[in-house]
Length: 79
Image 1 (spheres, helix red, strand yellow):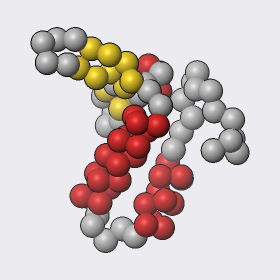
Image 2 (spheres, one colour):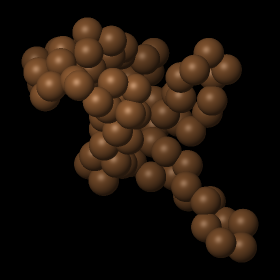
Image 3 (cartoon, one colour):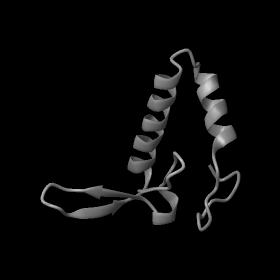
Image 4 (tube, helix red, strand yellow):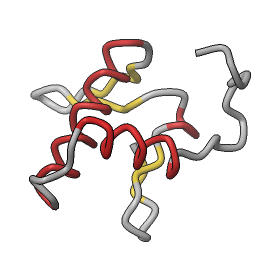
């Protein structure tokens, strides 16, 4: 993933997440496996910042702050 310098990580422009292997290899990962790990990481960081957030708080913050990035194939209502 590419760090934008403004506190965000842009995984969408790559079509996935770049993972590294011991010995220097890299691969591009996408799909549900990446999505679930990204979501878990975001939620962990949110709870680290504020352990008092409820499930509803987490859902609300994620939904209200999510952005569709240019080039993403997302159709509103398809998820």
